[in-house]
Amino acid sequence: MNETIAKFGYPQTLVADYTHWVVLLRPAQPTLGSLVLAAKSEATSFPALPAEAFAELATVTAELEAALRAAVGPAKINYLMLMMVDPNVHFHVIPRYEGTRAAEGVTVADAGWPKLPALGEAYELSAEEIGSLVGWLKKSWRTS
Image 1 (cartoon, rainbow, N blue to C red):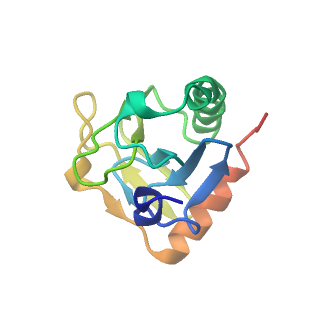
Image 2: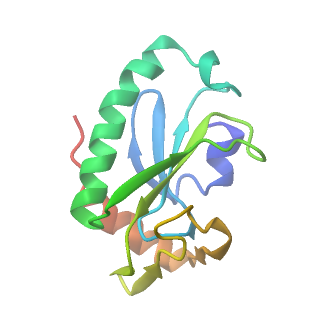
């Protein structure tokens, strides 16, 4: 796995594994169910990914959105490709909702709703909470 995937806590944060992508629980939760969708490639720019990664992205995002809708019930899902600190291709996937959501003893408000996600106000998960939320999200995942 590349440097970016390792930084986001792989393998403890792994929710789903695909040929070209991994879906990780984001250790800092601006909203409940926030994820990192990371390319396994060493690419540091989006167009540098292999064509097969782009093709698989359709399946990955469909399954990711279905799982988040089942688990969190967001009004919207934001994909942020920031890549300012972490070099490899990845998206921060932020389910958006008014108010709060709770699961596995963790409650998170969407402090930015209905505007930009409040990334700086994210709830930092403990190792135990990461394990619980990864298991919770995996129950909603339907892989192809």
